Amino acid sequence: MRVDVDLVLGGRWTSLRGGGREWLWRGPEPGRASVGPGAAFVDAGGLEECLPTVRGRPDHGDVWSRPWRAAGAGAAVVECPEFTLTRSLADRSGVLVADYRLAADPGYRFLWAAHALLDLSPAARLEVPTGTATRLHPEAAALLPPGAWPAGRPWLTGDWPAPAGLALDALGPDDGSAVGAVLVECPRARVVDGADLLEFALECDGQPRGVGLWRNLRGWPETGPYRSIGVEPMLGAAFDLADAGPGDAAVVPPAGEVTWRLTVSAHRRDATR
Image 1 (cartoon, helix red, strand yellow):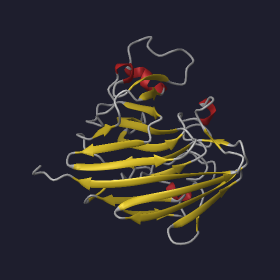
Image 2: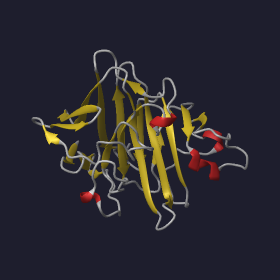
Image 3: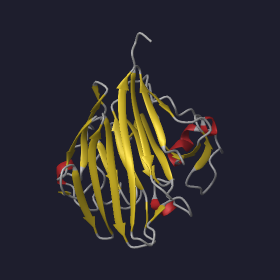
Image 4: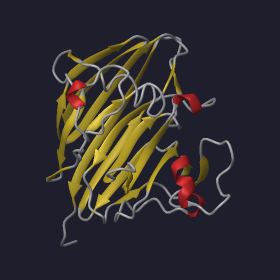
């Protein structure tokens, strides 16, 4: 695996290459170079680090819009008012290993997502264990039968791959829909696109782990919709920290820091097998 990052523009991963292909999608939105803390999210593609929230405020968190500084080979640091995040990237025997350390006051609650927007064909699929608890978010209500959405609830929970009867494992073709979901306590996920496979695995002791899914099949935005597929390893079980109840967010322990590791691998299956 090979990765390129842009530290000046929020530590963003601009390229992820493995298994003979580029995996990251590049978006159509201008203005990425001019954002600052608290800015509305600019959908430029790649992989953005979202922390301490994904949706909500600040939009997509507080680190994607700030410059990072180099801290040694493969390492970088971003400092925010309430926390400091350090990330180290390394290739280990063909696997990309991303190690993170968050330093903050004990009790600090946060969500983190590796907001990876992927360049996938209409035949691509997402593979996770059948029966994984999956939280549909409100935009899914328009795709469900009338009255199916529980009034006043931030999500509707069902079992993968078809929570509430809505099949989510197929990542295309474009049908004009857009839906977000969080797969709860799901530390591993695999994207299969023809002969190509991309795998994520997340390790973090004592914190909730999941996978965020943003399946936008030219259903968003209302003006000029486009296709974008997000498969997002995350700490937490909600997109918006404001919606996160007990156990739905990561919490800094008395030691004052949380560490976690994301591994990313890719390969191409032998067509003769």
